[in-house]
Every structure is written in C-alpha cells, then in structure tokens.
Length: 114
Length: 115
Image (cartoon, rainbow over all chains, first blue to last red; front, top):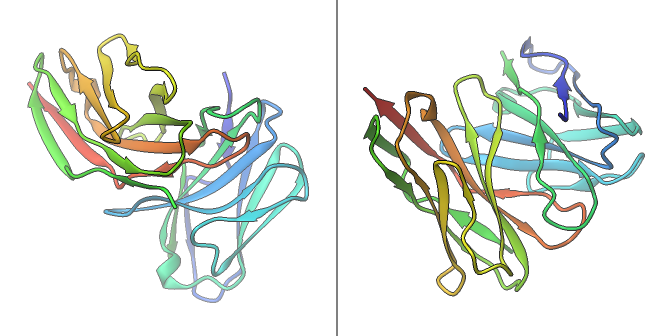
C-alpha cells in the first residue's frame, strides 16, 4: 500500500512565523500535491509537483511556496504565517502512468495560527 | 475551467437503508475521470470508487455504486445497506485525462448513519 506521511498531525504557530509542513511518500510517485481543506469549501489545490524541482501553482498559491528537492519529499512553506492560513492541510501523491491515477492522501496537518 | 458541485451539505440515513449522494460537474473535456472519496473522522481520505468517462458501464465496489450520466454531467453515489462505519464526509472529484493532473473537488457531503 502507498503510504503518505505528514510530519505533524497538529501544529500551532504564531503570526509571522515561517512554517514548514513536510510530506513524504514511499511509492516512488512522480506527482505530489498540497491541498487546503476548510469547512464548506472542500479541498482546494495550493501547489503540485510532477517531478523533482518542478512545481506548478494551484488555485490558491498566495502566501505559500513549496520545495521538492527529493522525489519522495514535498514541503509546503508558509513564509509568514497569518491567521487566515489556519486550516487543515492535506498532502497527496500519484503515479503519472496515464490519466486517472487516484491520489493517495496523508492524514492531514491541522495548523492553527494565533 | 472545471467545477464540481455537491448540492447536499448534510444527509442522514438509518442503518441498512440506501442513500444517494448527488454530484454534478462542468467540463468541456470529452475524456476524464470521476472519483468519490470518503473522509471519516480519522481524516484519512479513502478512495471509494472511480469512473472512467469513456466507459458507459457504471462502476461498483461492493455496497457502493455510481449512476454516471455523461450527457447530464451527473455522477451520484449510491450506498446500499448503510453501516455505521459509512459515517463520513464524502467528496466528489474530477480529473482530466492527462498524466499528472490534480483532482478538482466538490465541497463535500457529510453523511451520518444512525442505528
């Protein structure tokens, strides 16, 4: 089974802090994704990466950046955390073998910015 | 741009009953994939079912089946013989037929199954 591991289940940070959310997958997947989940809004794509050092903006990239130095690891960075970034963050990975490859998700990181 | 709409924010059903969750989508693509994911209180997103748009046959997985109406751009999920463990948030999602693309999600339906 694919395993996608997010380093923290809960995180509390202060406004203005630089925050790193880490995600590691063990299935040699090329594609990795960061989503944000908010009540009533569903999951919204922040950034994704289809290869090492490659990244693409999703629907809500403002205030975020990402890093993919190794194939198995995809980091989401909040350069200066703000209270409106309090949310659940979900990482996912998928195989690039054709279209329709399901995404495999981590357990999520619930981030609170105070 | 593609959009996915789930019009039922919350639903409830009794154990052993059947429930249908609605999903509509908008796209100009001809080939694509549709998914239903389940998110129980544990927060783990679990793939429930996957449908390929070029296949007319509706996908089924045990007690879960879909009613895929391509012309109407509708993709509903039917859960038969509902169980307490089916209590979760359910997300409908769309994916273009292109390697490495992301899922576009609806806003979700919270399903409560009671005894």
